[in-house]
Length: 101
Image (cartoon, rainbow, N blue to C red; front, top):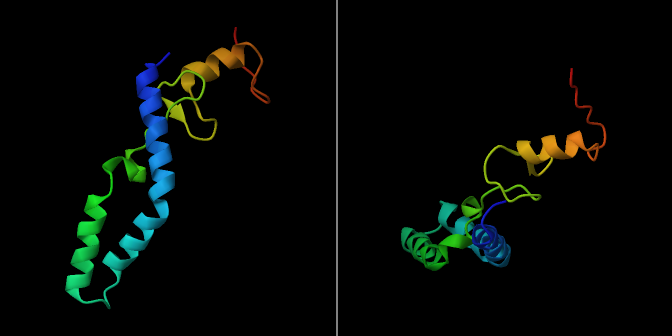
């Protein structure tokens, strides 16, 4: 099991990303608009820099929903390989046949 603080930190980041998504998208659109004067675009860059760093989507870490493990994560299943193996052995993953011989 992962440290509870690490899992909570990641959840806090998810909330920040959700809250600032619209504002961040508008500022990025201004920055990327080549029709605007350079001063306005630079002002948008400065406003973007003032936003919390944890509000950037790239700061979110994919973690296993069962154990919180940050590595060996399957996106489709939203869990780590270890949790998948354990649940597969117990027969709790539909459609998964775990072979043993």
